[in-house]
Length: 112
Length: 435
Image (cartoon, rainbow over all chains, first blue to last red; front, top):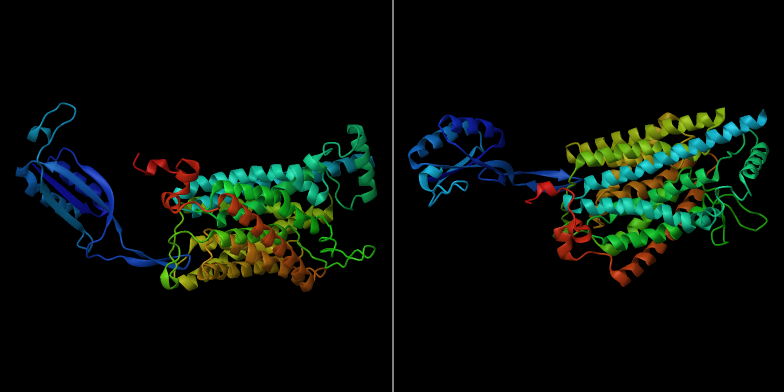
């Protein structure tokens, strides 16, 4: 079982969600986050005082998927979230030790 | 027949006072929304509480003693319902006598209760100017304690010397001279209160802010000024529009009479000029901000509108519409530079109240002789100085005493967490947190 975490541009969320549905990913968790990578921020003025807009709004999508479809998931997200411009985001894949469905108590891959 | 006309005129002028007073009361909502929009979300509940509480305190304190100090209106408004008469018929007879003596075109005759109603909302306006300047770091109850003293005593005293026509501690008159009493006069003219209400409120605010200090993190090393952004610009804008509308009552009502051709026309000019000045202030402030900062700054545009309104408040009836626009425009110009200046000298004013109401209030006073030949620059200066010195130093003493008794600033930890939690125990935007 793998946890696929993707940081993407907020307006790409719908496209990514649709792409994941198409390959059979049952559920995702979405969080609004802020961050920066190599895409730096810029400065603005508020009533004449300068401030740096370092952190840009992004969306984090997490999907727990079975190991055999990870490559498809990565490809789906990559294609849907890509704009070709700086700030498109990143995808991380990590191992899941255990998964439990709270309602029924199922564990392991059936719980995904 | 003549009596019927006089009664109608009394009714009209009373009604006018009441409706204008209600419009000025509406400015309390304007201040609340403006301030709520320009502070951070963690300070919003507290500033709203301050606004509604100070309004209630102002109304009560002025009712108890303030109106008596300013106009001899009676402690607890004694006898105001019948104005000293024994019964309703006696009151009507006394009014008709007064109306007949004044004549149809003379001074307005209206219900004393309506006079109190109109006056009390001005007191609340003056007091609410302070709440924005001390936002986000002052103890709520320290502020409310100050509000009691300001509305019961400090404001009524300078109101007595100006609109009340009384001498300043028996030394001189701000208005007309009194040869019999040997008091010189200065012909000070402040139609609706650029100085009496707005500059006075700003003076009290400045005294408070000097003793309070800036918000943590506002000013950095090497003169760095850190912006602390307002949490809700839609509210700030709504508040400004509400104030703009309420100001028609503020200036319009100050004509004091509606019921004849000359006065009605004067009222119409006042509305027109008030509106024009606000527009002028908005445009100039927006343009100045654009030129200085490279982008439009909504908060400066909002402050500009208010600055225009404050600027015209000292004399909204005599300027031409163009002149009113210019007076307001200059207010908009002054306010932007004033806001930047106060930040430069590390006086933290989250909403720009001291600039909008104090600095521009002074400009409003000094602009009067430009269009009103009855006033002089010297007279205006003496009036401005009298008001400022009295309110500033009286306020400074009161703030200092409160500081000694209970402290005026919240703890660093409470400021960090937000005065909403610390002073009020409730958040203004609870759905946007993790609960």
